[in-house]
Every structure is written in structure tokens, then in C-alpha cells.
Length: 430
Image 1 (cartoon, rainbow, N blue to C red):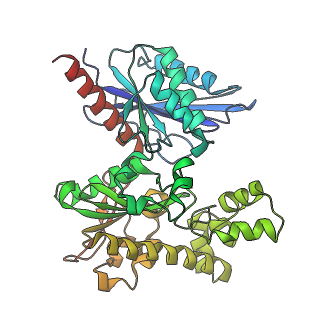
Image 2: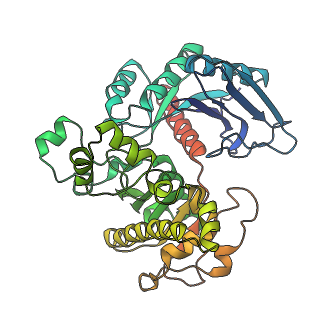
Image 3: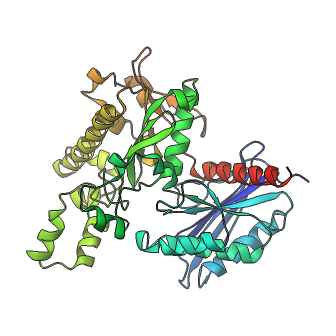
């Protein structure tokens, strides 16, 4: 039996998301989430097609999307740690006849947030790789430990199954040094690994390639600005399929205004708050990551609610929206300059895919750069689920295409995982 399936695991700080994909056609055979790990009322939700159909993409939602006529199982019990949660996931998959011992399973692909400068491509996991991911924990203290637990538990459940680490930072490792370096003392930066790494890399990789396909071109022929706008938000400049700049930096805090994160601020703001306001370093960290961005400006981080308030004439919400759009517009203009020639701007993730007002406002006034939306196309609801939701919303004949491209990070992780294990298998048989 040919092994053509990949299980994608995303082990977060208190949750595990997973999807089982059939690589022959990209269909989802199962999807689920375990949340509130470590609490007495942990919850596992598992869904699968009734008879081998596709389970829709669960990316970005609280619980997996369900196939029409599919099966949904939910239970609440205590999962003390990630090890217990992952073992429960394995049992759910086994109940569907597609457990970790299934000969159709080619590999498990793991989302790992931070790969530093070490990992520039998806990597087959061994003990040395695990040690390096652990060494990078100071760069992602909330995420890399959970990612590590997911890998080690999966290895213990089936030691012979290939495990592949796919890093959020990998797509951005092609940035030239003049884009990746901060202008601080070089020795200090090198000693403490301070540089721009970028995040959301699997999304930027998928969306930039998908945009090229929509234009009927190879990625090597296209320059794209990708705007990943969710609760976390990032922009990237992609030249000929390679990232040359991105808005997030050492951490996911830098760049665009986000749901709860400030994005760009004067670094001296931190010093000012410590010296003058008497805030602790941890207090400033909490402020900038949890109590800033849209929620700090107007109390809401849901763009739908903010737009409702704007439409009702609320000035606080209007200012928050204008600040959000102003920062977005600045990055679009900057990346037009970085790329020189732009073939497309692609909006993705929850806000990018669903907020026509954001897309319209972000490009308003940029007609001189060839950027505009057709109002009817921009406002129209997408026809069918992703990838059918991908569409061009710029006018016919526009110098720069404006695209809405639903992201699919799980499919991208699965694709990269499957390609790597296939290459390794081919090399072993030479």
C-alpha cells in the first residue's frame, strides 16, 4: 500500500490542532483540536468525513470545520499535558481506521514556530534537530517547548514513522542581510541572536505561490506583496518566489497593527515606561503583546465588530480602524519600493479574506502605484469554499492584480513534509 497521507500537528502552548491529509488530492480525512490542556475541563473535538470525503479546512477557527454528513465527536475530560492530549488524538484517528500505525501514513509534519538561522528548509527530525530546537527556546519561549513535546510524543507513539519539522521562519531565511539585520552593535546582535526572522512563513509561502498560479505564471516570474491579516498580522515582499523582506522581526510583535499587539513603536517607549511609569519589563511585555493593537485602541480586536461601530459613527472605533489601515498602507508602499515591480498584492487570513472595507481602505489613494479594487468584486461573497474562494478583486486590465487568497497553512506543511520524505525515500533507493 502506498503511503500518501500526512498528519499535520500544531502543538500550541495550551492546545493541539491536527489535520490528516491525503496528498493524492489534498483532501482532509480528519481534523480536530484539543484545547485547555492542563485544565480539568479540557476539550477534544474530532471530525472526519462520513465516507472518505473531504473535511474542510479548520485553519484559524476555534474548532474544526465539519464536512456535510461527516462525523463529529466531542468529549470533555482532563488532559494533564500535551503527551496525554496527543495520545488521545492518536486514539481518535485509530477509531477512524487511520491511526499512527496505518501504512497509508507517510509522515507527521510538525509546525515549529522558530528555526532561527539554523533551519532554512523543512527538516527530518533526529536527536540533533530536537536539541537545536530546544536551544532556540529563548527566541520563542511560549511556542517551541510545546512544539518539542508534540514531536517527542509522536516519535514515541510510532518510532519508525518519519517526523518532519516545518518552521514558521523558514520562508523568510532568504532575506538579504541588509533586510534581516538591525542597526545595532554587530557583536551584541550576533551573541544574542538578534535579527529579523519573520513569522507566518508557511502562509506567505502558500499564498505567494497560489497567487502566481492565479495569474497563470510560475512563482519565479512574479513579485507579490502578501498581507496576512488575522489577529496576528504580517506583510512580506516576495520576489520570484523568495522572501526579500517581512514586517515581523525578532518576535511576532513588530510590524503591522494587530488584534492585541502594537506592531511598530519607538523602542524608547519601552525605556520610558520602565523609567517614568515604573512598569516592570514583564508589564511592558504584557502591554505591547496583550493590551495594545486594536484592543488597546478601542477595546475590540474583532474587525467585524469594529466596522459595525464605525458604521454607527463611533469615533474611537473609527480612529482604531484608521490607524490600522495607515500602518498597512505604509508597508504596502514600502514593499512596492523594495520590489521595484509588483505583479500582485494578495490579502489572506481572517481579516484579509473577509473584510472588504479593509482591502478598499488599504489601497485607496495608491492608484498611482497601479493599485485599486473593483468595488463590486471586492464586496462580492466568494463562491464556494477554499480554494474556490480565491479571486481577483482588481479591475480588468489593472497594472497590479489584487487577489484574495484563502490561506492553507496545514496543506502547505503537509506538502513540504511529503516532498521531503518522498525525496528521502528516492535517495535511499538509488
